[in-house]
Image (tube, rainbow, N blue to C red; front, side, top):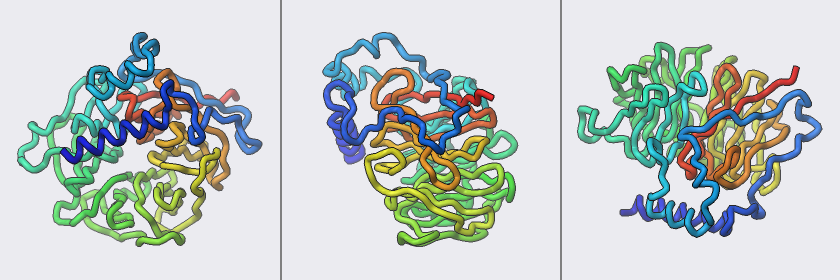
Length: 342
């Protein structure tokens, strides 16, 4: 009952922010013009979405959109409220569906449902973060169960990471191919716990605060090909960067309603050029920064058409610079691509 009430409040908040026609308000960012620091040779191109958009969605008036959303009539088949994506290619990716409490394999059109689990108490009550591991494995977190799971691509085996460790609201998770480590963000403990691939606790980073290597409800994390970690320090309205050893490198960001600031930062990822992407649920956009924290440009605005978002959450960027956005309250995943004109 409480969860349902919270969900309804979130919906009403989103509708209030949207106005009655999904119009821009003082917080929403339209697709920003590139700053002087942005590469002139790069731009973002929309590729696809899952599920495919129906023409009727675009033509609906605002009152009908609100009614359909509240009564669940307009929920697209196969996906409810996506929060995270792990991908190999635009047609092959996994989606953590927090609304349906399940994981969806888009390519195989298969789901891992709670009833498939052996232990009665291991239902996925609050899926949050996910990442890929070698061997076709996917790691994902459940913040309400306070557990981190590992599942094979073939769904043959589900196991817990560090099943004797007491996680405190695990959310973001990332695997480092450089160090063969698994980094888990513990939002409730305001820290990051680093494990070996077999679940041994190696070290912990952070405590509550607003200084370097301190956190205030951290959420998402991404690790690049060099082993550097990028952490969304949500209630400090910033991103912190650490090297592969867990040492603090730099931080950027501040609260605000202009391009380059944060209101409700969610997902984070990096492309092959070292640019940093951060989704912001209240801006309904994805902002792009360079490694020094300089704001380059953003894409997206509030709405339901191609390239528009409603409270976007998790981000994932594959090796071909395809960008996957969990467009949570539009009940879809949108795929974009970074294009380099050169």
